[in-house]
Amino acid sequence: MPPPGRILIVEDEDVLAENLKTFLGRRTPEVRVARDAADAQRILESFTPDVVVVDYALPGIDGIRAYNDIVRDSVQPPGCVMITGHMTERMVQTAHQRGIRHVLCKPFSFAELQQMVDSSVPDTGGEFAPEQMAQPSAVAPQAPSGAVSANDRRRHERRRLDRRDANSALDPTT
Image (cartoon, rainbow, N blue to C red; front, side, top):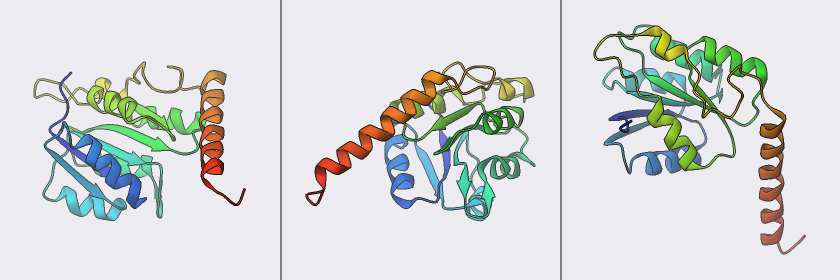
């Protein structure tokens, strides 16, 4: 599937937002960044994304509600990848029910994010097909049922410990 032509990133962490914009911008002509849901609504007045990458933990609102606000008046809702630092089974189920096809737990590889973004582009031949948006992808980090598998939890814990160990190695005071 070709990359999207337009991406909206809704992320309040400045460094991550800029890194996402730089990485995704290598293959996508137009990438915009909103720091919160209100900023996203302002951007949407003049920008129609193919895909939204939204953080779950935004100031004052969660990423699921932010995405619902984005798609409320859309003729063809954009695809969505939600990123989070703390994935729960309930969050994943709710996200899938609301049309968010992918939930990606931090830390993640940018290559994995790109794959999810590319597979989130609505391909409806000009007609909106709601069932397409509601189908979770097999590349999501949870099982298709929305459950977070034991392997996913172990992988996340290994990444967290690896980051901690790497940070400790860089700190001369430890």
